[in-house]
Image 1 (cartoon, rainbow, N blue to C red):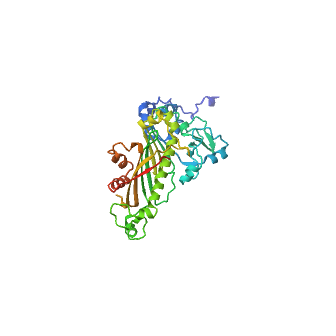
Image 2: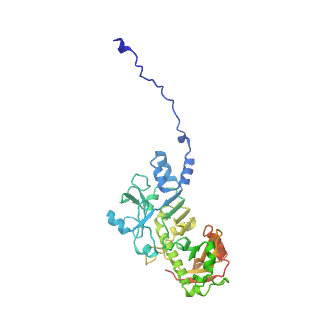
Image 3: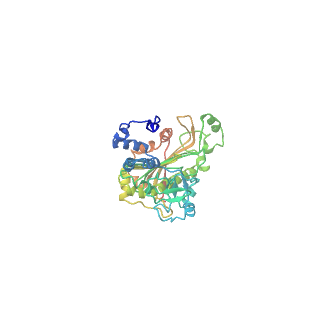
Length: 379
């Protein structure tokens, strides 16, 4: 009996802990939004939505968003694998860009225009996407169109979409870069190309070769050598130019639904991970597209390219600040023919600022050389 009254020495009495303050809750919404705007990545923002109700409320207010696309799948492949209706999304007649899948990217302009594809962003099905849950399943990954992914962002101002690679299939040693500005149609485009990018130490051997391409071994007097025309050099540059314009106009065509829905946008950039091409639209250009619908090409799902005036600069070789040498360096500045009557004083700015270094220096060096003018019909 006495033993039952003996206190249990194994019992521990812990005082109730004092009330703790969650310092994170003390941070103002404006500071959290600043951090979220720096993050930008749409998949990361999607994951933040499931962290707390507060984040779920703040994410739609983010102004700066980056959508990175991991790979491309054909519309036919997606349909056969999932049995989906291809007419469900605004991009069903063009192409599907998927985040999270494992499919070979577009490698050639022929493939780019030859197969219908849809533009989508994929999530792994754990609720970390910004879509409305109506995405399509393919290979265990839920795919949403960019319109679905971005529709919950009510104050979107700066949008960047990054494709997994450039659309134009080129050899590893070939340089091809372009930048295009669009409103309801093409405003201007700059293309920089080179047959190869070589190290400075190999330059002497190439220059001494009598049969080197584009006449690099010949005397450089600032003019295009005769071999440029006879060895297919000019034809190659025309192909580069047309291919760049087709890629740019196809990207522009894709953006219509996003631009129409997000009227708060101040800037939109559609680029690729390879740094091959960049399409840019500022606030005025975005508004122009909303007011004046684009003219679509009858041949494919892209914006019609107007009649063009072009200026071409060429150098057999051009040394970059980092020591590399561009063989057969070519710069093409493109504007619609209807702008030909306007003053040319601003040409230097939009051409020279088209690319980052070291290619910006290459552009500034090329425009000092002899200028050749070309024209191209609408297509």
